[in-house]
Length: 572
Image 1 (cartoon, rainbow, N blue to C red):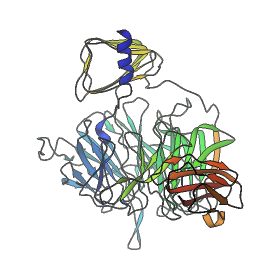
Image 2: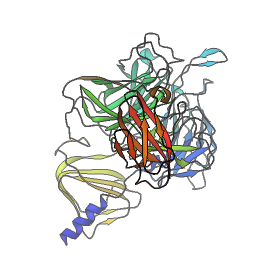
Image 3: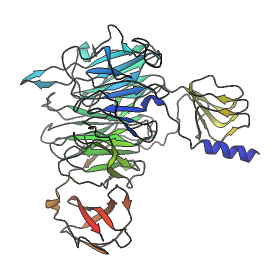
Image 4: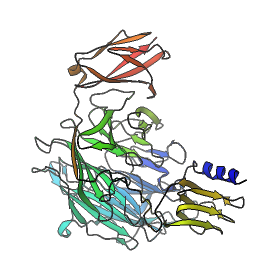
């Protein structure tokens, strides 16, 4: 019988565990998706936007609360809140990313951080002011579920964020990072060559930033032309000196030697500062903006160019001072001008992208957690005729209650926490234990987790074998110490056009062999079908054996020292 119940506990470890805060995305021109399943397009949005940052949030049970484009806030019944007109300074935020964060100490309050960049208005420069707004879900009229619809807390609409010397400032994006205490958060905003980090704890927002330097060469910085794009990875356990990777890129030409270059930096979630332990300089095509996203454990960074359909994957694990591994993802689409405008990871770790402004699909990176084996399906999620726009909602960060690591845990009564993570260096055993509907419980143990017959699980539950050091308060104490010394690396992702590559294929259509003609040595090839699925073929010098492929249309990506060319062919 012991073996039987051990098997049950192992099977439970494969069940999905997630909070409902990220169940809904509202974005673009009345586009929306529900992620309570694998991704279902919705048609109830009343928000129409193309260039503005967007955000949406649900409660922990997956019920929509509100969504916003940085100008208005719509409640769950798709009405603008009575005081839901934002940016009282008369500007409409045409930034890249806003952020929504639940107040760590008050379950009714939600922050909206809205960056407003400097921009041209009828030929004149308008000064943007980055702000925060607080929504109180205990306010507003009663909705159709007999709960309040929410409204902006009085005197908390579009409050300026104080920058250095307590001066308001313009910005283009906001990110949120969980603090090392697993209870507080950093709201992180790049401002020129500085990074502002604001602490949000149980008492609320501390409107005075921790400031650190971004090592960017921008002597002729223009707030109009050089807006930034920022992404921060999940926590990575590669060094005791930093906790997260931070990707930042300044759009447009910064100067002749640093044009459209991005950087991956190291960030410490205890101090809220950039550290000097790691710098990866990434060069992209001149004049081309870029977007990026990390996979769900920070081991891979994906970088896309707004001016082409090429997306690169960069290995953030097997990295050394002498080498950085990267590759171009196969994609069932080819364009020298249309590329991903944004990348966002959803609650399941899937990475979605809008390809150009007017697209009625969301593209998706297939298999994003396997380096050198991912591909892109450009037509992955149809939006039922709605338009994706430029930006997607960021993942909402939420507080996890994480228990201290002790050697053995015995649970002998019904669960009292709505959300909790139990951690044991050896074992967790239950008896007369139950998890109710709408409770979210995770268990991590180094040796085993045993659920006895009288255990009753009705809520969200995850059991996982993961070691921790007894007495530690951090969610994970593992440290691979990959970066023992400061490391500075560079990576050039600039590509040349197909015409410069001078690559051609024949015969086309073909029934057996596809011949590649090029003046350069072929480094690698990959073939995908029209759904974006990678298929196996054999390369022999300049010949590709496609006899095993079913009849149909395919794309072949051909990599040489001059770049990557994508050609379409038909297998008869």
